[in-house]
Amino acid sequence: MNPLKLLIFRNNRESRVSDQAAFQEIDDAVRQDDLKAWWKRYGTWIVAGVVVLVVAVAGWIGWQRYQTAQRATSGVAYSSALALIGKDNAGARTALDKVAATAVEPYRSFAMLTAAQLRDKPEEQVAALLEVAPKLPGELSELAQVIAAYRGADTPKADEVTAALAPISGVDHAFHASILEVQALQAVRKGDVKRSRELWNDIIKDPAAPPGAAQRAQAMLNLSDEQGTK
Image (cartoon, rainbow, N blue to C red):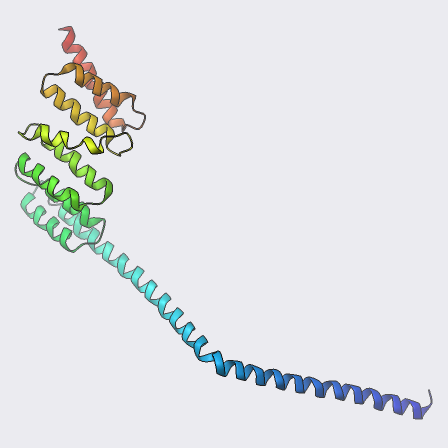
């Protein structure tokens, strides 16, 4: 190539490269100015949002740790109260009442339910269980009523307490089989063998009945058969 033409070509090429670099610098400057303007307008809100998020996450983690610590403390207090049962029932009841007043769930409800069963007489136990039942959540409330019926089987209020179980005696309730068992015991108490056998059979046929309830029902039927042959 002619040296003059080569020189002109190189100059033109360098000029184009220089122009591109200049345009790139201008474009970068404009972008930076736009970014600065955008940040000036919205940056404060972004920082505030990040701060709020960090505080919220930290608060949530702190609350989770607090609840875990509270549950652990409540669990220890509840276990310590249970350890007194049989040795010092009065002391156990006092300790359980304290847990019921200060502990988190579920230990609060467990303590209330257990303390009610530590009354001195069956009639007192029945009254205490029926008193705490409305204060307990869901199935624990039903359990308190069922225990009251068991404890009250030989008390003057046996029929009244058993009849009160009717609203929670359906097959869709957790303690359906237990309620049938209570009703069967009441039938035996009244000498209604036919009715008690019907109820024992209902328990055995119930696929959702706890194994213990089904075994007791079968044992009662066997005992009834033995007495009938004598």
